[in-house]
Image 1 (cartoon, one colour):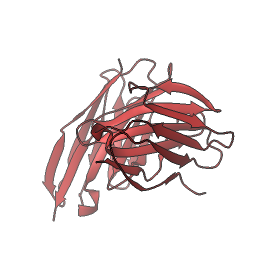
Image 2 (cartoon, chains in turn purple, red; image 1 turned 60 degrees about the vertical axis):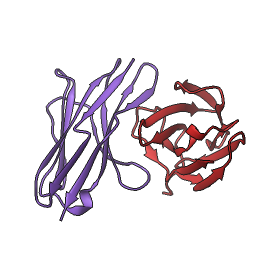
Image 3 (cartoon, helix red, strand yellow; image 1 turned 120 degrees about the vertical axis):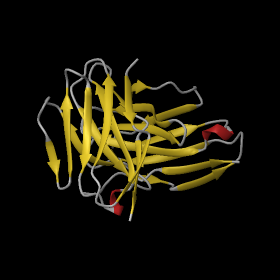
Image 4 (cartoon, chains in turn purple, yellow; image 1 turned 180 degrees about the vertical axis):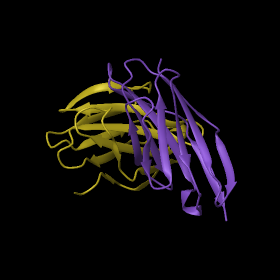
Length: 111
Length: 113
């Protein structure tokens, strides 16, 4: 069965700190990994990673995929209170088209 | 482009009742997936529809069912509601495959009393 595991489960840091969120996966027919941010309601898309070792960046957020070691990290630098959210990673199985989500990392930024 | 819409946004039902939730995908998206989200279990995959056919199903009992219409709109139905069905139900649409970037609707918060 496909599995996506995120760590830590929750993280509390002060504004301005840098955080690293981890996502490991065991997914058959793997081709891509997705990161989402969920504040109050629907998850919103952050990144899709398909190639190993190529960093994707969006402002203070960046993410990278390691297909050899089967993990991805999401970095947030100079955190702000608006970054407080649950961060989800997910990986689709391109054989059966199922998307498996991790349980998420709850990030809380203290002003 | 309008996003994914879900109705209703909130529902309160009692045990034993049934409920129907609706999802309208982004225009041009043909794949619709449904998820149940609870604090303890995270996002759990319910099923995925493509071209009016259920293409995939998660590990939920038969009380959970769905369908997709020719305009890609989808409904899910839960019969004989149980207390444990209280959750946020999210639908997500993507172009063709569930592995494409999925865009989520705001969810329907179902409370079963």
